[in-house]
Amino acid sequence: MNSPKLNVATIVLEAGTLVRLEGTIDESTDSQALVPGAAEVVVYDLDAVKRITSYGVLQWVKALKELRARYYGFMRCRPCIVRQFNMVAGFGKQGEVLSVYLPYFCSACDAEFETLLDLRADFVIAQTASPPEARCPTCRAMAEFDDVAKSYLAFSADYPRPNPPELAVRLLGEAMRTSAPRTRSMAPSVRGQNAATAASAPFTSFAQSESRSFSATAAAADTSEPANPRSVDRLRKLQDDLDVTRDRLSKMIKDRKSKT
Image (cartoon, rainbow, N blue to C red; front, side, top):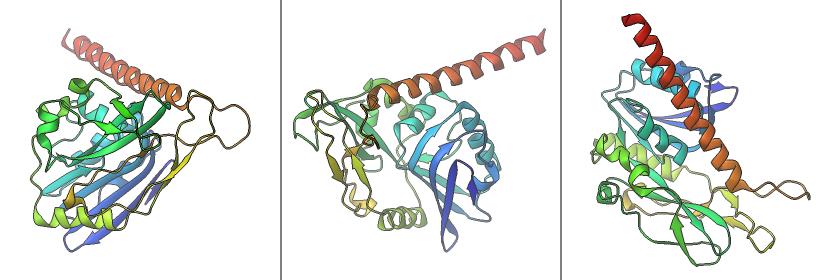
């Protein structure tokens, strides 16, 4: 099941389905492609979702409304997805947030990377908005959390500690077991050094709650001076935030007009 900008793959395990998404969720996304048939338990693996637009949010929410599973959860949520949990009421409906990526920035070498937080084991980190210290995988310097912790982890007030059923746990393990090793390039350093390529090792079982670090940007494909990946990501985040705000204002105006 594919959309032009989004690849959707499924793995069926007994009465459960793992839905693995890759690409951009936008207006071209078919909401029906996100809804597995008669699955009783569904786990969405969002590890490879690069971006979600305001129109993509509408398609996502529509899909969850049509979902008839008795349980569903979201794993490996990238920052672009975490922001939606924080900004859009009902973005996850009745689902559980199982794991999220925490963004970090190394000022020593200008590298960005993310670590995986298993909310089943370390939910207190989200509750207290206290992301752990992390070392840069490139230069081993201490990195800083690349967001406002209280705002980034605010979703934990609406999505409590997850308690997935046994079949969902097996789907989590299947997702990690079948994850292909990814090769990412670190952002170029501020000293103008060449970008270093870091290959992430295969993920171990999700139940072990092991965090892996990798870069969030890719090296430029040509020899010209690359754009600053950090600036591009921030511009995309700002655009997504503006899209969500615009949609909220439009809805408020329509609601007010209908009442008058």
